[in-house]
Length: 106
Length: 114
Image (tube, rainbow over all chains, first blue to last red; front, side, top):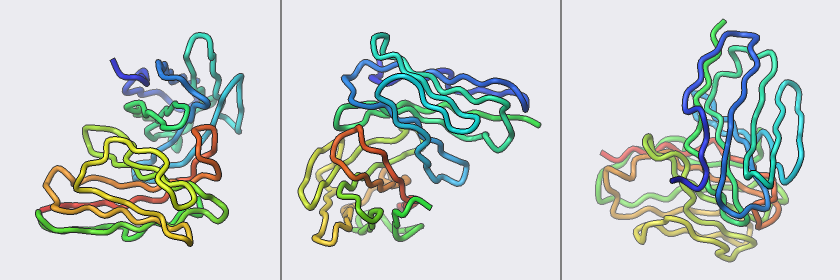
């Protein structure tokens, strides 16, 4: 079992749908990161969380430390949200999940 | 723009050769991280430097080495290259040395070993 697991691995949805990507971890953490990787390959940091909830535009990230679980939500999804979303967790060294490939169809 | 500069963007070389990848961190960031992303492996942490000193090591092969210079730029040296070393290599930087410091990624170097 991987130390950081994401689900689902692949997700296809229609434009406008509410999207949830999940991340469970078994490592000790000081923070959990959500990253976005577009088809061109570049990686953008979306959120860094150590507790609670953060919101940026249509993106919301939550973390439950007791349950060792985090979720990334996208409201009113758009085709430009199509990307691979990666969860990473750790105390010093980050351990990365395998990523969730999201495709939003118009 | 993350402020992290990686060069070159693409590199094609033959097995057995040696290459050097370069990373300039975002201004003010003291930590530099190197990651490898293969098609079937996801992102793998290789090594971290903080203010010139090695801070943490991941699954870095002995054929690979890195260093961080006084101006804080970093180089990743890959030697005796094998076909399996073909991958995207990312550099990231952060202000602090622990995981609770926001990361800024470069655009990556795509290495193809033929």
